[in-house]
Length: 140
Image 1 (tube, one colour):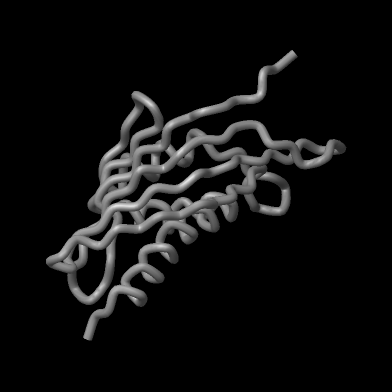
Image 2: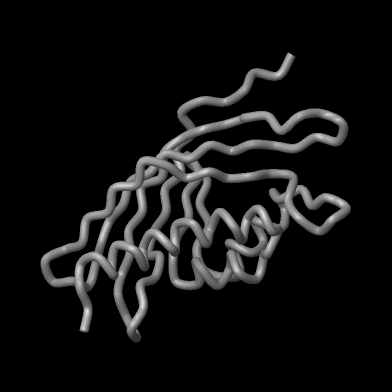
């Protein structure tokens, strides 16, 4: 039996799973999270497991330890479950930190996620993620 609190928690877990997969450079997991979804970063988009995996492979800088050079933090999450309990939307802020060898971790970008989810086969799934950049560190 579904309930609003467990639905919200499951959706929040999906949102955070993206951050962990990205920071762990887990391309397969990123593709799986968005296998039937579209991911937008400003005007660029990728749809489905293969496209999302390809974009992630081209964008994620992998360190010697096998992890990404980035850390994603997701805050101020608002989740709205539709009355039918089969779709939902969410908003959140994100901050991207980058690790450069020999330098402290630095915030390099922040923005907002606008997400859509669908419920099917006993689980919530991403339907769409729009990442809007609100701030970016200016490079000297």
